[in-house]
Image (cartoon, rainbow, N blue to C red; front, side):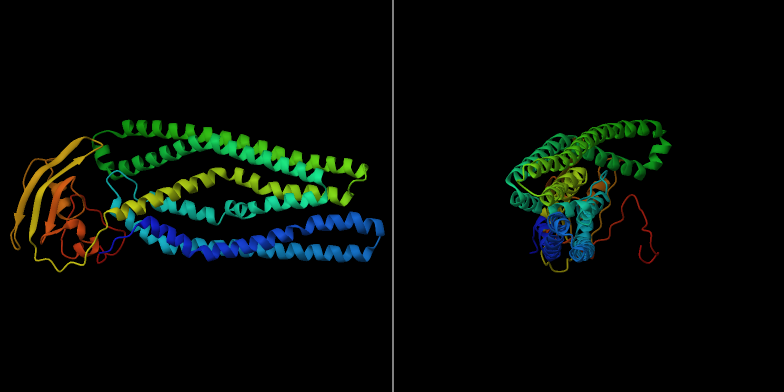
Length: 422
């Protein structure tokens, strides 16, 4: 029997890419160490070069700074490259499974391409600025600790500034999360409604339903845009406030440093170095808040992918069964659409031996096509069992069952491919 939790498959795929993330974390370590070149350069310029007047020291320090910046740019490029490779690797591990799970679980009226769009949304975050900010965020406390080494007052000022920005980031999450989730859910439902309308465009045109359809589509989209605007306005407000606070704190620490220089408690180099370190320490927090909407959407998209592949496997209990002879048994099957509270099949039972044929007639909407879908294993009954040679159809894998069943749906659509492929 083949039974596995596909949510574990998603987790395993992420673990299979962890060496890429570990390498990227190593690059982040080197990058943030090289970012210390600028404050160190400032310290040496003001505390040594200016006082000693040594031009040779100035030239050597400048060359070292340029070399550090060149190495930093190269490492940043390598980090971006390795994260792109992680995204491609993740796509190769999961995209086919997601498409398969979409086919297994897609019901009429749902968007078949939404899971793939969700997966691409998550992959784009892996290669974007958001993940770089997450890699740099653990270094913020280290920059604050270095400022403490320059002077305790400067350190406490930097610590208070960072706590203030973190508080603002938490407030941003609280204000943005709910309307953003509502906007995303409404937009997804609107996409699904659009897909369903396009699939039934012939009926819509014939029945003169275009105006009514556009009206409903417009109302749903307007509501989604209202929630999106609300979330975007709040996010923009918080992002602007955090940027204002970062620039203000970065300038005020210069003022505090100048006071300490006047009091001869620190040096001018320490004053400028503290400002640079504080700006670098607060930058990841500001970036994360600015990209918060993308991060929230990616998190929600990944959650939907988890739910999809997990749901696609809940019914994936397949056995290695022998080639069937063709004996079909339908045992008290019933099927109802819960959302519409409509029963399409009620306690249907019959048996067919191998080689026997059965024709089913009835008015439109009686459930003939629904019964055919159950016999082909396309749908699962709400109650009862359909058996092939005594084995429940749900115990057959779709590919294995498809080798022995011919099924012609009521609505036929050709793939964009050759006649032979179709």
